[in-house]
Image 1: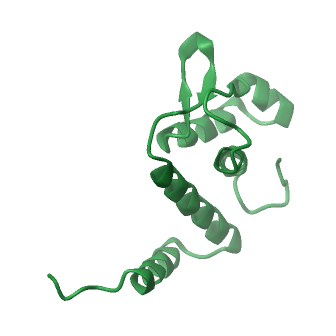
Image 2: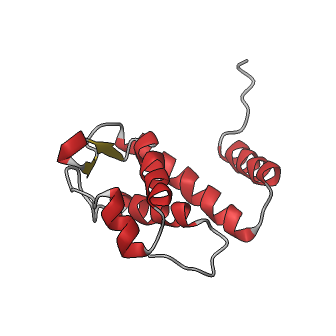
Length: 123
């Protein structure tokens, strides 16, 4: 799951791994994820690193924490919106790995969207 030679931070690699598995349908709603401590130990990472990845996934609506019941893949949210969030996250991860600056990445995304959604004259 982790590439120690990657320019992508470990928390982002963990986030991307789980986001991809959720997007592919490999992890379905209700699937229980390892605890933060368990996954950190398995991967040899700090607990805070895994916790950050889980927070990012939760912020995207892909997982939810249920206290003592653990962390599970979320069933809530619009599937199209979730897929769009995953696509945006994948783009961000990829341009970061390529060393593209934040401002250049935003400009590239804006240009791509403008090609797909040309401005209308409707005001």
